Structure formats: structure tokens, C-alpha cells
Length: 126
Image (cartoon, rainbow, N blue to C red; front, side, top):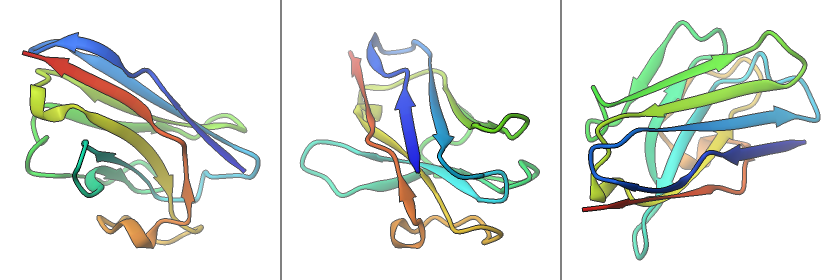
């Protein structure tokens, strides 16, 4: 089982980035998935979640209107995306993707996710 996040980098404030998480090793097409982030010296926090069908999405207030989560269940490897627009310096963090157990609903709580990727660093300069 592997969740591989990619797409991070160093950008200026106002720029956009698209993160990708490739979930493989088992079928994740029935698993709710989410993005979390952890800034230096801070606790990990919820960013966005999507239901296993992709029909329902949830966002932290701090990213609502700027970030969009989506997923592609069409292939054996499920892809989770996070389109990040109008980036701010306070968005700087390591972004990790996560998946819940099959058929569980979306959640904003870290400890309700069973599978985790290694994270990708996003740095936004002012």
C-alpha cells in the first residue's frame, strides 16, 4: 500500500500549484481521501477532503475558495489532486495525503485516516 504525494515546490505569493497523490497497492476507489498539512512548529491540520465517490468535498475555512480537491477513480491507481490558487505565505507546509478505511465517510480528523503518504513541501514566499 502506497500513497505518493508530489507537486510541491517554491512559489511566490499569489501563484498556483497542483498537488497529486497516487494511491496504489490496493483499491482505494471506495475510500474517502483528504489532504492535511503541517507547518514548521505546528500541529498537522486538515485542509480538504473528498468522499470516495467524489460527489462531496469539504474544506478548511482557511483554504475555502482558493483550493479545490478532486479525485480520479478510473484507473487501478487512484489519483487525488489539490489545486491550490492564490497561495499565501501561511500556506507554507508539508502537505500529506491520507485515506480512510473503505466506505467510511469523509472526516476532518487526523486519527480517523488509516493510510498516509510521505508528504510534499510547499513553500510560499512573500
